Image (cartoon, rainbow, N blue to C red; front, side, top):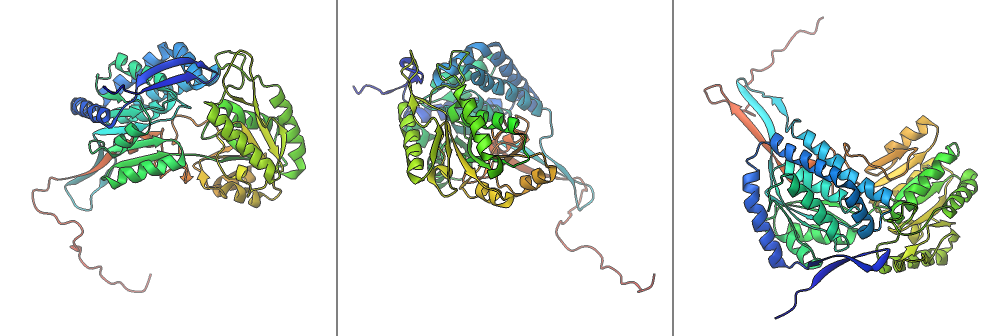
Length: 489
């Protein structure tokens, strides 16, 4: 008998600390999960939308009750410092509240008919079962972005979480079941490439939602579309930039750069990766950022005193270090950081918050996603040129501009090609009620969160009701000709 492989997640700060172990799923496991979710969905879809919303609201309440323990689990399994881990869980609580509210909001639109005694409206219907593939860096929040809207729309769910954060996903689903989500409606399959590929191509899955890297997202989308028509939503990478103009509040810009670049050890798709600063304030701004970085505490994320935790695994640290070395080879200088550091009592990989100066827009470090605590400083004087630099990469997720000039701010908002733009705030910090997503290679047009979050998990149905009692012909020229008039007044 062949022994089945397993998925074990480890504390990235202390790799010897095994957080959870689960069987590695196979295509057959995906088959069983889809079948179970399909059976449960048939019952769930018949429940009125407001009643579904009440269950989702209850799930938010359970998450709130368990916030402390879930936050500690996120810190231990994903390596996020406690404050950020608590924010991860709070985001799921807030998402439950928002999505539950949508259960009593408009579900479509009504329009006047061109004919008499006829009604026209749209509504939404579930796609059946949705397949979700989620990353480790927001192990509670991102499942909530996807699962709650999918449930409100009347679907069943099969989720394949990251192999780095299986326990967080299990804890989230357990909270949902405790709150009243029917058993079987949300299925979890752990593992690596095999269950992910099976989920993306399964004929019983009506929609696929993926959050992760651009190369993997392309493979998921191609496979999903090749095997059948299904909704495919992608949330991929970012190379987010902060523009700092000479009139900016530099205290505020320092706060934003440090938080945006080094929060979550730079492991957010929205992390601030490029600092495009006017030469008149560049030296002063960099000096102040470097000073602030020197005050950051790098350490165990479960210690409340820690400001920057580990990167997810040793391979990530090696990749980040190689990108920094390549930047120096291209001509950049290391203002601070630049290498992995050791933390007493921890055996994980900690990469020092790094600031690189002398970076040019064509350098690799200015164009490719690092997904680590590295800030590349690019000096640009002209505003139009600065915006061109922002827009010159393949990603279009988030950007920010710091200025006291409202005209400069609003003109930049119009010109920047990203899905999210901040003024006088860092590139991280998206809120629940508004759509989240990007342009270009960051995504494929869908948005998560906000009222548009439900769109990726439902189909629009157009309804016409004719109560005239006789045949009426739309789009048939049955209007009398317009009579010509005189030229006078």
